[in-house]
Image (cartoon, rainbow, N blue to C red; front, side):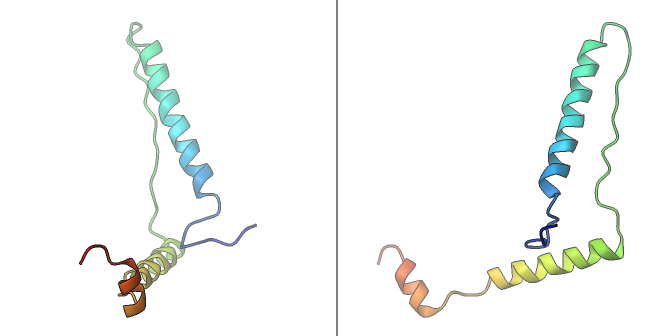
Length: 83
């Protein structure tokens, strides 16, 4: 298995795509059975507060904090636009 990057699970893309597919299928089935008076619902749970998720969120916050550091003076001069 690949290591997580930036606090994300290596399978985060697959999870998101699967949730999207379930949602799209639910909408399609609801439209198909509207005339029959049948309701179609789905449950798409979000994140569950566990110690593992807490560690992921802490790591993600650390990463965001590192990205927000002020650029070095050399970088600031090189990327400055206008005068």
